[in-house]
Image (cartoon, rainbow, N blue to C red; front, side, top):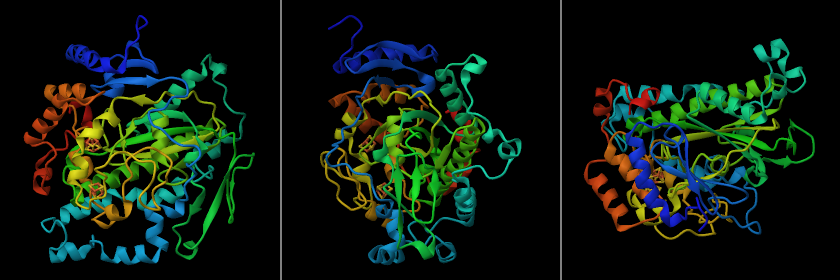
Length: 466
Ligand code: SF4
Ligand code: SF4
C-alpha cells in the first residue's frame, strides 16, 4: 500500500482517531489520507462527527446499469398517480382524513391531537401551498433583479473581481445557505435524473404528460413540451433540515409540520437562489420535487448516500431533510460524491423496515428491479413501495426517519462515538451500539404534549446547540 493510502477496512481505526480530534473542539476540514477512490476527510462543520470518503473521478457511491436505466416519467410517481389513476384515486378516498373531522370527532391514527397541532401543521405548509407554483418559475418576471435589468447584462465573470470559478462556486453555495438551505452541493447534471415528461397537477390536464426535451439550445415551456438546453448542465442540490422533535412525533401531525416547513423553505430558497443566478446573467430553473429526481442529484452533489428507506441520508442530519434543486448553465465547479458507510450499515440495520407500519421498506437485499411502476429500475438499491407508504397516513408518517440511527442530533459524546463506529463496515459491535441506543429510548414516539413543553431553543434555527 502506498504511503498515505487508506483502505476501506482501515475506516474503523481512522474513526477512532477522529473521535479523539473532535473532543478537542476541532472544526476545520482535515485530510486524513488517500483511498483507492479518493480521499478521507474529517470536517465537523460539513459532516458532523463522521469521517467521509470523497470520491474522485467517475466513481460513484452507487451503481446503475446504463442498459436498463431510463429517465422516469413524472406521471408514474405516486403523487401524480394519486391524481390520474383510478385505483389510486379510490385508494386516496380510503386514506386517513387529515381535516377537521379527525379533530372534531377525535378519530384517526392520533386521536389525541388538538387544534394547536392542526393549526401548527397547516401553517407550516402555507408558503408551499400558496407560492410554490410561482416560486418554481423558469424566468424572472418581476422584482428587483428584473427592475435593475441585472438579468439582461452579460454573464458575470468571476475573474473581473479576481475570483476563480471555484471561489464563485463557493459563493453560490454560501448564497444558498444564506437564503435558508441547511446543505448545498453542486453536481454535473446527469440527464438520466430528469423526468422524461411533466405531469400537470391542474385538474383539466391530468390525463396529459408533456415531454421534457433535454439538449439543443431551447429553454422554454410551451403548452405541448418542455425544453431544457444542453448548456444547463449543472445542478445545485439543496437540503433543508427537518426539526428533530417534530419528526419524533411521527406519525402525528407535528411530523407533517416538519415536512411542510421543509417544503415551504424549499420554495423560498430555490426561488431566491435562482433569482440570484439570473441576476448574474445565467439561466436558472428552480424545482422542488418536479423536473427531476432530487435524491440522485443530491448524491452526485456530495450531500449524502441512499438509505434502505429510499431516502437521502446526510452525515449531519441523517434522513431528516427535504430536497430541492436549481438547474443552471452557470459553469460551477462540481463537488465530489461521498461515502460514509451508509450502504454497508443499512445491510444490517433494518430498523426502518421493521418499524414501517405499512411494510413498504424491503427487508431483503438490494435489487436492480423495482416493485412498482413508481420505482425506476436500473439502479442497485432497496426499492420502496410508495403506494403503501402513501396509503398509510402518507401525509404525516415519518416513522422511518424517526427510528433511523442517522437521524439523531449530535447531543452526546455517546452518540458521536456511535456515529464514528457505525460507518464503513458492520461489526457485531455496531449492532450492539444500535441496540443500546434504542434501549436508551432513542427512536420512540414523542407525544404532542411533550413537544409543546419545549421552548424551541433546539429547533432547526438553534441546531448548533444540539
Ligand atoms: S413514511 Fe411511514 S409508511 Fe412510509 S416508508 Fe416510512 S415508515 Fe413506512
Ligand atoms: S433505519 Fe437503519 S436500515 Fe433504515 S435507512 Fe436508517 S440506517 Fe439504514
